[in-house]
Amino acid sequence: MPAHEGHHRSYDAVIVGGGHNGLVAAAYLARAGRSVLVLERLGNTGGAAVSTRPFAGVDARLSRYSYLVSLLPKKIVRDLGLDFRIRTRNVSSYTPVERDGRPTGLLVGGGERRTREAFARLTGGEREYQAWQRFYDMTGRVAQRVFPTLTEPLPTRDEMRLRVDDEEAWRVLFEEPIGAAVEDRFADDLVRGVVLTDALIGTFADAHDPSLKQNRCFLYHVIGGGTGAWDVPVGGMGALTDALATAARDAGAVLATGHEAVRIDTDGSAAEITYRTADGEGTVAARHVLVNASPQQLAVLTGDQPPTPAEGAQLKVNMLVKRLPRLRDSEVDPREAFSGTFHIAEGYQELATAHAEAAAGRLPTAPPSEIYCHSLTDATILGPDLVEQGYQTLTLFGLHTPARLFDRDNDAVREELLKSTLAQLDAHLAEPLADCLATDADGRPCIEAKTPLDLERDLRLPGGNIFHRELSWPYAQEGTGRWGVETRHANVLLCGAGAVRGGGVSGVPGHNAAMAVLEELGD
Image 1 (cartoon, one colour):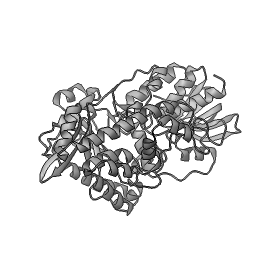
Image 2 (tube, rainbow, N blue to C red; image 1 turned 60 degrees about the vertical axis):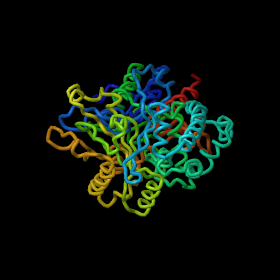
Image 3 (spheres, rainbow, N blue to C red; image 1 turned 180 degrees about the vertical axis):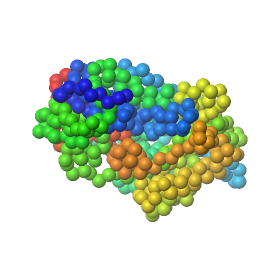
Image 4 (spheres, rainbow, N blue to C red; image 1 turned 135 degrees about the vertical axis):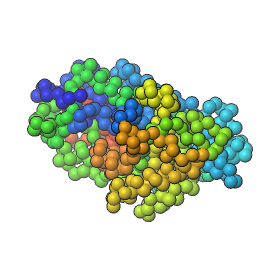
């Protein structure tokens, strides 16, 4: 939408950044009767949670950056009356592999009987399936107990431990590297790898990293909604942020796009925000400022010393295909294999090797990645003609490719990595993916890739890190404040992914920052 030039000179709250968390905060505060202004530097709201048509002349509206929903509490959807829906995926994952010279794989989903049979087909017995059931029963219990706390004031570590009420689960998830649990519970290398991947999405770590950053990543990937399910946003991710923008605007918030905040001056009780537009600079006063940007950008705005950026380590690829490629494993329907998470080169040892190579400064020889097809679950993102012709979208997320690997030549390394990543996929296909790719209006293949450096440039993600910084434990630690959004400036709050309990498309930091403001005001 166009920049809004008719806003007032003073607001109860000014929100810097119109990503999904900023919009959540704006909607809550405006619905509580507060005057709210959102300053967004781009020409549209939504941040990384947007849908776009990346291919010229092609009616396919893809979730360009973030793409699945798990951590968004139903409470936020209900509270804000959002016109937004999700759909579950019938298949959780498919992981192809070659065993004894023949193509096979592991299909998880489609009912308990089919999953049990898939484990037996791969491993030759019941042991791995039973271990899988026990492990995810444990994480499911943790999810039910931890997820509701995300929209409450931060519990202490001891309070969280009491809430979990399972000493084995606490040790496995919160105290020792997740690799120990994976190796202790599972024997099959492929099964181990499938479990470990949830600890590595957007996180560059080894299974045994003593910092436990892989554990924090794993925790956030298995607690969503109290179930750990990752669901498809109907209409694409932009449907969520469009609904949030509507909710905020309908409640009275002013959304000013094309307005880039460049400075925040505050004495702790009142603030002045300087912003820049195509026509020059302006200022606006606020009682509270909520920053829906990275901790680094917050520091730049307030004149503080920026923290060291946390390095991003992923490749994001968007594709449109004329048809789904056939698989070498003929016992699995591609429509099932690609509807869940399709794991590529993500065996346990493959993940360890890829991490070691990247840590040594080299692109992984066999880059690990995972793919899913949004349009199999929700075809609304495609135009009617594409649906009728059988076109499908493919979204790929690559692991273990830290930003440092792209420093020498981002464009050249991107192309090299994309080629080797797709080669790993082709090894499990009965036909090359290139033969299935659609073409745009100019005859170019419908495929685009984004490196951490691309994300840093396009979205101002420090180091290209999709979580803005290393994920935090979901409990209070020194300096985290009551809600996990507080900064050293009393009336400036961090409501982006870099807040405690931030990361992913959740709206949790936006909710918590709004609650902190309303609590202070006695609402």
